[in-house]
Length: 170
Picture 1 (tube, rainbow, N blue to C red):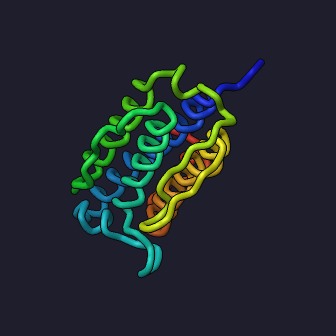
Picture 2: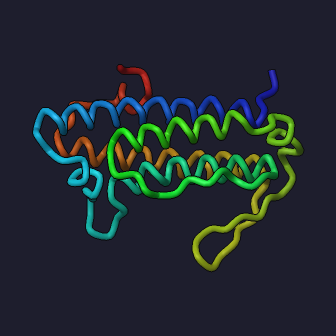
């Protein structure tokens, strides 16, 4: 069986989206139980030099939607960074999933060894084979930011564990 870029991406990203939606739901419920305003936890950071919780979630969708759109050769769906609640972050993740699944499979899968050049930071571009771009940049970044969001909620005492991060708990 040959694995295609689209099948690898959609399988992995769906797991990330499912996991993130679940931890967002548990984070929201725990915040309600503790009578904590969403804005407090959405602005929480693991370290002063790291992005806050809401931005970590936004970056999951940014890397996945922009990355997959580049592989499909289309302009990514616009996703403004204006979420102010757990519910809005959950909606954003669902929109990211929908955007990725709406992309043309054949375009994503075209020539996995061809190079793709993409922005990597403010003033830098990188060029990688399309398969490496998917695995080592798009998926790696989505997993990193989802894990960081998970870790922030764990630090805040939300009762989540590995099964939640694996998208296997509800």
